[in-house]
Image (tube, rainbow, N blue to C red; front, top):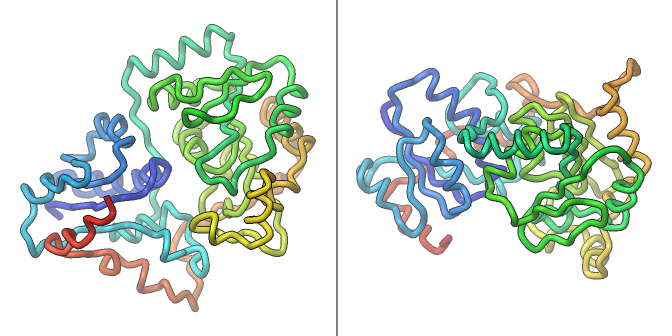
Amino acid sequence: MQKLGIFFFLGIGDWLLLTPAIEVIKRQFPATKIFLVTKNRNLQPILKGDKSITGYSFLPDYSVFFRNFKEDDFILVPNYTYLRPWDECQRHLINFYGRILGLKTEVGLPKINLPKKDDDFGRDFARSFKGRIIVLYPFSSVLANRWDKKKWEALIKATRGYIFVQLGSKGSPSLKGALNLCGRTSLLQAFALVKYARLLVGVDGLFNHVAQAFGVPKVILWGPHSPRFFGYTDKTINIFKKISCSPCHPVNTQTLPVRCQERLAQGLSCRCMEKISVDEAQEAIKKLIIGFSSEKKEDVPLVLGGANLCRSCFLRQRCQPDYFKVRLRDLRLLRWLD
């Protein structure tokens, strides 16, 4: 394998899930040059420090492809969203990405390379509070993942002796009792804050993968998505309420069950998130701070490896690299994505 082109138009969290497969490719084929075109400019700080990526450009600029590939060369477009692998396939999404890139072995965990100045920022910040920092990620971009604001504030009030640092996108609602740094740090500074935190408490989203990359303990509240495909078990307590309609894995708010759409329109949480209590979250925090007790941990297993692929899975062929290949000349038809 001499060159690999990737056309990627998903989020930062999805990119982190793709990094383990890219690392395996670079380890097995060190001379391989990997080129990327993406529409997500927020990836730029991460890509700058990623030595596994030879070159990249942002839509509508395809120049990195046109300089390095011929018109008939194939480019991989690893967009799983509408393929919905979780409907039939028992693979964790990290390994699903590995299959897309042609890997038949298990791949590792998300990787993040922090520049020294950002790493120092996170370490110095944690030291200033004597390491007693809990990072909160309460509001993801997925509205269906949100837990009630009053419950977050009750959780903060009930957990004494720690400084809660709230991270998220600019404009996220502030939580009473937390230091709101949403939009006040760079992306990599926010990653560094997670790296040096005592633990992370949040909903499914970007910082779940960031914490896993740095080995930070975490409590994750799950709503319409399943930790089986997007979550982890190492140093993790997943709080997931299995009700009749969950997990529904919505592509967007319009694909949620009607009752949940109505609840969100009223400013309420989805039913699966509503059933998570403050006491459950507080108990999970205590377990991680003190250390896991000797009792058996009830957790959702992380599903990895080909042995877990259902025999009747209709994705047996569709999770192969050929399904995601497109000729470079045909990428012009995808310019509407910008």
